[in-house]
Structures are given as C-alpha cells and as structure tokens.
Length: 350
Image (tube, rainbow, N blue to C red):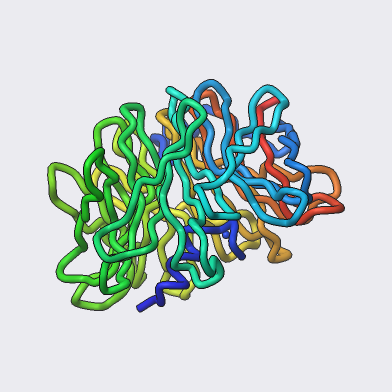
C-alpha cells in the first residue's frame, strides 16, 4: 500500500513525474516516424523550468512555470505568450493540470503554511481572470483537481479526515467522495469525459494494490490488470470510453495500457525500454505518454495504428514526456534542454 506522499507525487509529476486499431487498418496504414514530428518550446515565466499538462482544441495549453524566485505558478501558454495565472491567496506554488474548450482551467495551489508537508494544497478553478478554491473533503487540508470536461465538471482527489486520499467530484456546493473499490482505503480520479465517465485508481480490501477504475452511474468498476500483473491505474479516457494508463507486468515493470470492450491491452514500450505510461487519449484513439528507451532515458511517445513512436526532444535535451493530446493530434508535455531539465513543449506533425 502506497503512502500518502507517494500518491501525492504520482499526481504531481512536477514535484520530483492506437491503440489497438483493427489489424486490417494496421496493415494498410504507415506508422509515423520520429522525424514526422516537430518539438517546439512553449517558453517560460522569468525562471528556468516549465511544464505543460493539458491542452484544448484551440491549442490553449496549461501547466506551470518557475518565476524569478524559484517558486512555480500555474501558467497558460497561448499564441507564443506565457501568462502567469498565479496562486490561491497565501500560497507561493501552483500548477494547472487541465483546460476545457471554454478556457476553464483546473489544478492545485498551495494555500500557505508548510507547503513541503504536502498538506496545504487546494484544488482550484481559474476562469474570467479569477482563481477559485474548490475546497476539500470535510476535515482535510489537501485536494487536487486533475481534469475538467466540456461542461465544467471537475475531478481529482482529496484527503479525508483520516488523511486517506479519495477520488472526488468537485461540485458547486460540496466536494463529493466517489468512494473506493471493494472496501479499499485509497482512491484518486484523473480524468473525466463529456459522458461523465471518470477514471483513476483505487485500492481494494483484497490485496491493497492499486486497481484502475471506471466510475459511471454512481458505481465504481474495477478494470482489472494485465495478465500476470498485480496493479494498474487509469489516467485518461476519451468520449468513446477508451481508457489508458499504466499496469504492472509479470516481470514487475509498469507498461502503458489501453482498455476497451472489457479488455486491457499492453501497449509495450519503445525499443529496448522496460517502462512506459499512457497519460491521455483523444477521440481519434491516439495515445500520449512516455517510455524509457534502450538507454533508460524517458521519451515522449505517440501510440497510433499499433505503433509507438518516439516524438523526440528539444535540441540538446536528454529526456521528454507527453502529458496530453487534443483531437487535432497536438501533444504537450516537457522536454529537457541544455540549460533546463523541464521546458513546456508541444509536438506537432510536420
């Protein structure tokens, strides 16, 4: 069973970080190659680090960037401009995690106190120039918003009065606990589609391990594991109900997966790699994520037509990761540069 800190860090990669098309289609479609994509630096606030976590169909991208004093602020990247969205009152650090077509932004912000204790972060909604605290479950000081759908419904997680993490829906009047699987203690929600289907992970009473879940119609369903695996977690869902995430393999490694029609499929890794994570999936079934390569480096990938393609990096970088993808096929995340380990990056097809 993971500690609260480990769970928090899984949610906050910033604090440390198709799919099975038919075989006939794969046979006739040519897979993309790395040189088919261009990586572009989205810039930064007056600091040296930035990262992108979400993108909408208009290309508006959100994430975080360091400011001059080294604190990180929630950030909007749009049309070559980098805009500081700030923090909640009393906080010095914040990060945006998602944005919808209406330009509503969600994420988390410190609210003052000892921010390194991981107990003073609140979920926020940013719209019309104002950042609003979305609150927590009763008796808690910590919550995180991970995703927002087209109707403005927000999901994420909050600690409860017992300091257990719980998947939640941030309602207009209250934070709603979505529960856990089979009597488990911990859960977290990572994505919501426009059909109000929510995915994430939950522990169970039977083994205490993380299990990917789908929440709909008031019930949480266990999506299971890869054959021979012992854990899984879902991080993305599209409007077709296809789910992606990561799951353990019999060898003990974590691999990206696609779940559809009741079946979880291992998407593998880049050549020579042993770890991969699928972060997001668009309505075309294209998957974004990261994989290690033969040298053990982290590389952003696009998975489509049964093929995982290394998206490359910014010039001089040695690592990259893709966090989100829109229906136009634009991917965002981060890439290393010669002078920074993280720079917000967008990948587009040439």
